[in-house]
Image 1 (cartoon, rainbow over the protein chains, first blue to last red):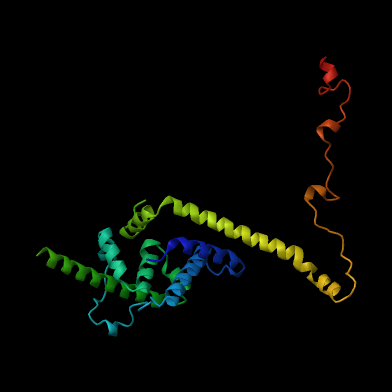
Image 2 (tube, each protein chain N blue to C red):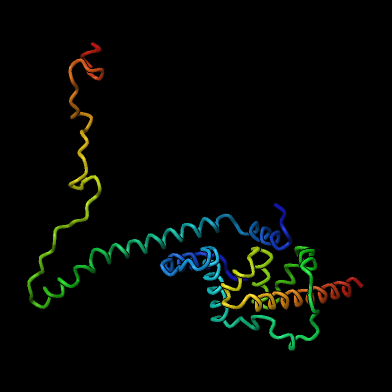
Length: 147
Length: 102
């Protein structure tokens, strides 16, 4: 987990010092969110903890299911969800948090990540598939432990 | 409001964060803003005079500075004068006249 205490201060000051650059192309909250997102990604890049940011092409993950319904994610226990999110690549984790925790519309996520809406939809789909796969692995491990 | 499991996770993690942390963040932010403000004031006061100081340092005359036009609203020449309570002229026999009551 990233250190939230110094980050909050730095991000707040960054927002304050960049207020003049806010172009009103997007909502203020979206702008704040994108500064925060970029700050965190830069920090991770600087510290070389990035690994893979997003689950890349489906070719690289052929065993991912085609489509995972939202219910599969939303019905997970909070502890399981925490474990699943921790095991996801950071980009996938962020995109799922934007979608399901912050309830951001696809359009805003696309604006923040500077990608097209269809690319974001695809990334969410891949992130969900990856989360589902991690969950299955966790459940399998749990069953083996019990046995 | 009904929360989904993602939002419950966020709330749980928020509860784990000690209250002093948010107070510390707030204090640090105010400290940083105070510092920025102070730097802004320093720049405002001194940088405008750097040119004159440079001219003086090279042996020239200090350029004449215009009058300080920065005034608080109450000291502005167009602002009305309000009489202080002890300067008010009370007409004899008026309801405010202390002698009237006596």
